[in-house]
Image (cartoon, rainbow, N blue to C red):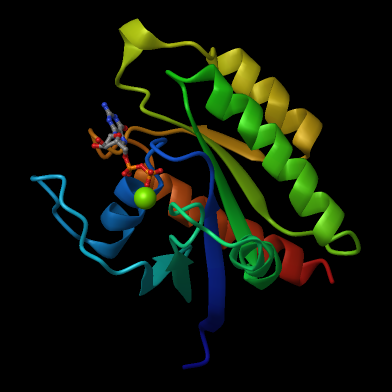
Length: 175
Ligand code: GDP
Ligand code: MG
């Protein structure tokens, strides 16, 4: 259609256990009450954001155990946009997010790729190790957007994927 905003590959990056697959499953509309993996890693869905359709190909292909270096390189090269996830209950995962941002910048130097930094597991208030302020400050340094989500409560997950669509459109329009 005329309003078709195109197809965009969105990669989730981040340490194991931070909630990448949980966020992806919500995007895919999968109710995963038993915590079992669906086996699929790539989902396509069309979202209507601000009255315009865009199709996202969300790829949860990062950091599965035994990943070869070429898989990581491929992930870093193939995305039109990135969601870098850490867990607010795991400071090491927050530090990994910084490393990933640096790696991404190095590999995609000339490009202004849309990135959203995500602090997931915001429902686990009593185990919080990374404050909202720290997350926000990190995103300023990264020059990217920031959002806290809870995959467990489905909080801000819709907003996350809509935000990615908006970021992609902004960068496209400014070219
Ligand atoms: P991945 O390794 O990054 O793909 O992480 P998963 O999506 O497999 O999640 C790892 C574990 O954290 C699972 O047991 C999830 O149920 C749990 N989890 C994921 N997101 C949340 C969240 O927002 N809140 C809570 N409390 N648990 C979560
Ligand atoms: Mg996973």
